[in-house]
Length: 120
Image (cartoon, rainbow, N blue to C red; front, side, top):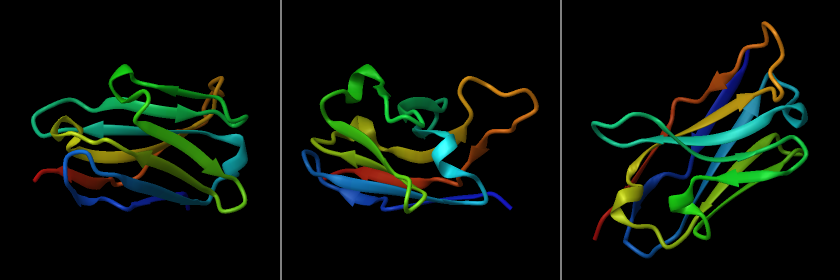
């Protein structure tokens, strides 16, 4: 059974920092591309950051220079270090795992999310 479990969300003040974690089980973690997505109230889910199985990263423009995605293959965990947060970062943050390039009939996986609220 595949599980992706996010943690680390909470209330943070504007300009503050937070680190999200996503612990996985049931997959060969090192072979998966891992990503973070977010969904703000009343909005569609959007891409935040991704890290390939080889460690290459990519970010949405609005978080470049503020967020850092990383992975620890020994711990089967992916992280999102968030810095200089602002209220527009308020959202439920979801962890995602997939194969890239896509593999036919290979499913992707989502966590249940962790809420990040940026407010003073």
